[in-house]
Length: 120
Image 1 (cartoon, rainbow, N blue to C red):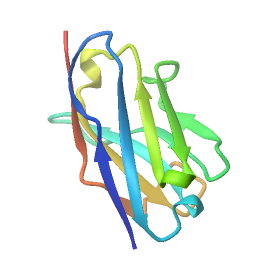
Image 2: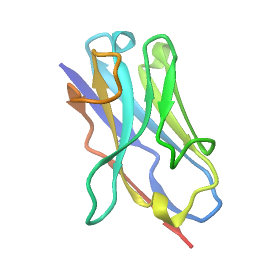
Image 3: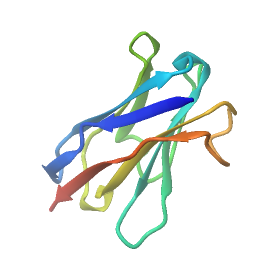
């Protein structure tokens, strides 16, 4: 089992930055590929970013160039640095873990989410 706990969400203004963290406990964090997703009110959950065990990354087009995913295996933590935030980035952000190296498809574990609200 892997437990994931997100933190770092909050209320910011458009153009601000925010860094989300996802702390993992349980089985070996470094063996998992990690993703960030988000769900805005009334919308389906959508992919944001993904980082593989080796550090390779993928991003949704909507966040490419503004968001950066990273991981610190020594701290069992994955981060999402969000810059130049827009009102459309408002959502609950979730981290997730999977064994597969593909960012698409199902994930094995999910966190409870953290709210990010961007005011314009």
